[in-house]
Structures are given as structure tokens and as C-alpha cells.
Image (cartoon, rainbow, N blue to C red; front, side, top):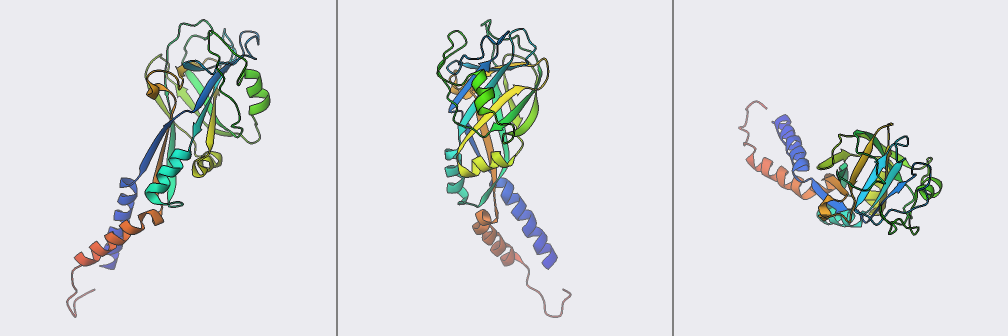
Length: 256
């Protein structure tokens, strides 16, 4: 009977962990694309105020594009702590959702499917700026400042290489590697900066920025956590008491 009770408890605890998983979704607080241009002519321009973001391989007609996206994770930390208590939850998965977008501006390369990478930037001090594809500015992050100031190859962390299927509509979700920096930022409730860049020689991906309409079409970060034993303490106690109450009484002299 003890073995049966133990098995039931394990099954109940596993089911409880899945049942009581919590999800938090948040939109970007800043984003921008940066462009090198066909001959480096766009490398000092800022494009943070438009409705679209882009990434493209360097060998394409209009040159290389990269995008940066910033999220404030303080709301996620508060929500998970309120539900489970500080230290009583762990991260199960983190996904980035992007909504493909079309374009008519000649600055962009034609949309082409392919591979792209996402990395976690340690430097969150970049500014979005107010420039857009038609009217660039010089008051925020640029291609040159991204390369020379904000990228740090010794501390930034790779979060995966992903496939863009092509097209100018529809949402795609990308499950990020749970690197130490990514989980650390979530557990600290700090800012999180992602850099998106081409991982092959053909990809050209255009997707909605945070200022696009509707707001839900902008970049979204989806975090799923599950309770640790401390977060299930009260539930566990209730399960144990329930199972013990239902345990049949033993008849003296019967087999055990």
C-alpha cells in the first residue's frame, strides 16, 4: 500500500505542476532596426520610430539589416512572485513571437525565407530613436553604434538559430534557449535586450514593430513558469491529507 500511495502522490504532484503553470506575455518597450545599406551609406542612421523591423543578409541588394528589441521584465517577476512566492517558481520556456509584415519602401530587401539568429545583449543602454524608413534620424541606435558599442561577443549569449518560412503576414513563435543570462534577467525582473540577425546568405525578414497596429502584432515575449516545491506546499499537503483519508483501514493479521 505504501508503494501505491507514493506512486499516487508522485502522479498528483506532477499533474499539479503542469496544471498550475503560469504564463506571462509582454510587449516590447523599445525596438529598432539598423541598416548598413548597399555601400555603408545607411550605417549612421537611426530607424527606431517606424512600424516595422527587419533583418537581412549582408550580400543582398540593399545591404545588411539587424534589429534590436528591449523588454521590461519587472511585471513578469511581480506576477510570478505574487502567484507562487519569491523563489518558489522556475522557468519552463521563453518564446519570442514576431508578426510578419509587408512593405512598399525601397529601403528594404525583398522578403526571402531563411535562417536567422537571436542573441541576448548584455548592454541594455541603447536608445530606440525616432527615425523611420522614410525619414532616418541620428538620435538613437545605428548600425555602427550597434557593432562598435553595444555588441560584446565575449558576454552576449546565443539564444538559437531559427527558420523564417517567408511571407508578409502571420505570426511566428520562436522558442529561445534558456541561457544563464536570459533566466537571470527574468529572475531579476530587469531589462532584456535581444538582437536579431541573418544566419545565412539569403534571408530577408520584415516584421511589425511595437508601434504597429494592432499593438499585439508587435514583438511579444511569452514566459511560462512552473511552481517549485515551495510553491506547491499547501497543495501538496492537501493532496496528502486527501489520500490518507481515503486509504483503506488495515485488518489485523492481514497481508501488508
